[in-house]
Length: 480
Image (cartoon, rainbow, N blue to C red; front, top):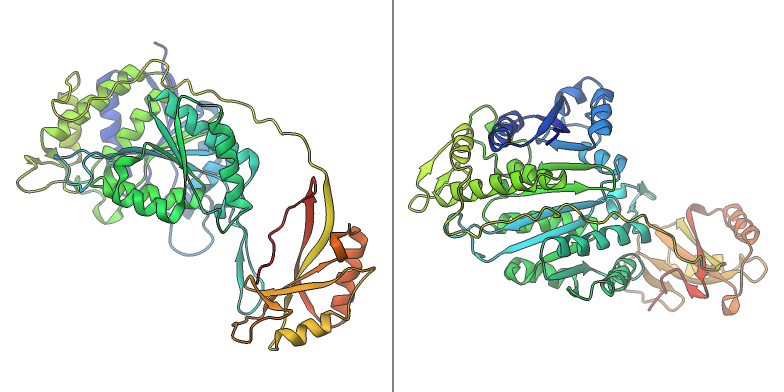
């Protein structure tokens, strides 16, 4: 077998120790790898590179298209970008795959039957990082959910389930509140699910879904969700399994992939030879499957399972009475190497098909373009102190060709007309202008309206045009 080139980053803190242990095991198992080592993380940040990764490292990743990455440390203070977020966005790593398995009775857990995979959208949602301070009292973060972004990660989740012998895919959203953003994710899930009749599917509101995931994780199989929910809940499930230190993570795109443990660099225990390399090792197993070496991946994973059930444990999972031997990083790697070729006797063995990595990569194609019609504008003001009725009275005097004030909200709550005096208001006001009957509006009328509002002495901090798409409103209604 020709060796597969991969980029390796030893990282910071415990990173070099667990990466060395991981690579020793892979070499002993017969992995055919051509390693390119790069430096990323704290030292690179301190050289003045704000994303922690210099051009040579980028060149290597572009060349190999596979990165095995140990945890890094981001220096404290402002001015430093998240390397993970940068990598995910720059390389279009849209699917974050996080398997979580219980290893009871050898690793303590209250959920011994848990065996699930969380697939998290990796680039959008609130992680777009678009934030603004708009008034003295109000800050804004934009939640961006796109149709292609949702489709790609949802389709990947179904393809992953099918390729790995999973039976069900569950979607978590909050579309009872966020009807457009999470509503789009839900709609795409239902549309794509219809193409996979061999797999069960279900959708849950994320709050009750999270409660059930924490209480009954064994009822879930593959769970797909937007970015923020997936980030939080994958850490929750990792902790439920017994230790975050056992949890691997794969970041998958159409052309690139990154594999890592989900835990941090733990600088407080660096250099002490006590860190658990399991999260990174299991991430390397996922990498081997991805690059077409499933037989080696299976061999490593089986040996690791045998080591765990033999009670040879690092400090984070060692328990008096159930563990048999407390070992450090190096000794744990030695124990896994000694068991290469063995199978677990109690824990469920893994089996990786030769086609386990053959998840279809499908180029996204846009659907028919909807007819888009401008029908109004929301004008956001920094105004106050004052009563909503005072603001409504003044803005009602400003209009352009029938484009008039319709409603005012504060923090999403209707306060004019006929608002409640008990409603608490900040200095941030959304003022909706529309024509009677929802008649079309010209862009020039919106510009003229804003000019007149500014000339009347108001501080306009933002406008948001209101559109219909094929006659369906593309904006939330105002209730109250």
